[in-house]
Amino acid sequence: MQARLKAQVRRRAAFRCEYCHFPERLGELRFQLDHIRPEQHGGPTVLANLAWSCLRCNKHKGPNLSGIDPKTHRTVRLFHPRHDLWEKHFTWHGPMLLGLTPMGGPLSVSFIVTIRMRSWPARRSWPKASASPNSRLACARERRSRPPNA
Image (cartoon, rainbow, N blue to C red):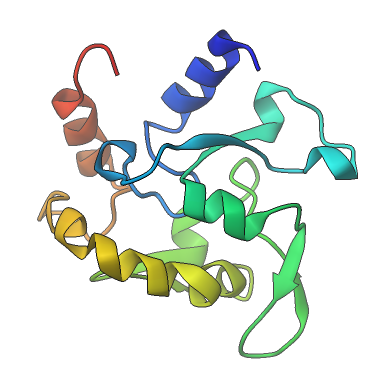
């Protein structure tokens, strides 16, 4: 994949996972490009169809376009970082990412609550003034604290 395209995706994502909003600089594993609509389902390798993803979110999502809402047991479309507003579907509660809507449920309940517990010390380093790493304040601080070559 073109280095230029990868750099564009990283910058657009503000150097954090577009699914769980975990900052790349605090990640234990490398982040990667994810096809929002997977290639096996006809998704093209273009900027609009690529998301910056932590390894755990990318591996969990896999080629899925939908998931099962844990409350209703109905099939729901998965969160789409280009079409859906993150704050409407998710919220951080300490080290746990919680789904606020049926769309947010499969992603958060299935795996992020479990895996992010290991990252709790890193989570505490996010700005205290923000309950979410997605706030404007958190994003501004994240950009200022990032090394110039990141």
